[in-house]
Length: 172
Image 1 (tube, one colour):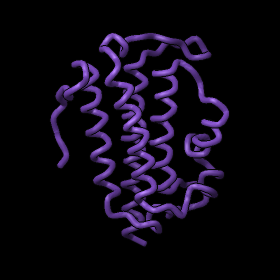
Image 2 (image 1 turned 135 degrees about the vertical axis):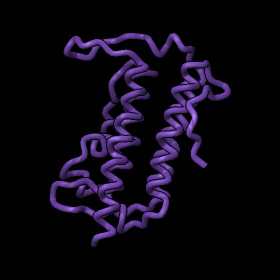
Image 3 (image 1 turned 90 degrees about the horizontal axis):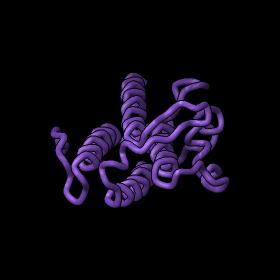
C-alpha cells in the first residue's frame, strides 16, 4: 500500500528520513504504474525517436546510480560504470537498439538494487550532509539535497512519460 505521508523513516536522521520517505513514495507510485506490464509493453516504441518504458526504467536507475557516485563518493563515473549505465543515462538511438527484450522483473531488480545502495549510504549520513555544497564544471553551485531532489524529479517526469505510453498501448 502506498503511504501518502511524508514522515521521517526509522534508522535515518530527521531530514534524511523525510527525503527517504519522498524517495520511497515516488518509487511506490512508479512501481504501481508498471505493475501489470509485459515485455511487449516494456519494449513498445511509438515512433523512431521515442523511448520505451523499459528504457525509461533503466534511465531512472541510471540517474540514481550517477547521483550516488556524485553525492556519496564525490566523483564522476569510472569508465566501466559509464559502459554499464551510459546508454540508459543518455537514452536515444542506442537505447532504442539495446534496451529491450527484458522482463518486468529485470527492471524491478535493477531499480531495487540501486535503491538498496542509496538507502545504505543514506543511513550513514547526517542531515548536515544534505547541505554540503559543490560546484559543477561550469562553476554553478549545488548541494546534495538538490541532487536527491533531482533523482525524484527525474523519476516523476519519466513516470509521466510512462503513463502516456500506457495510454497509447490501450489505443493500439
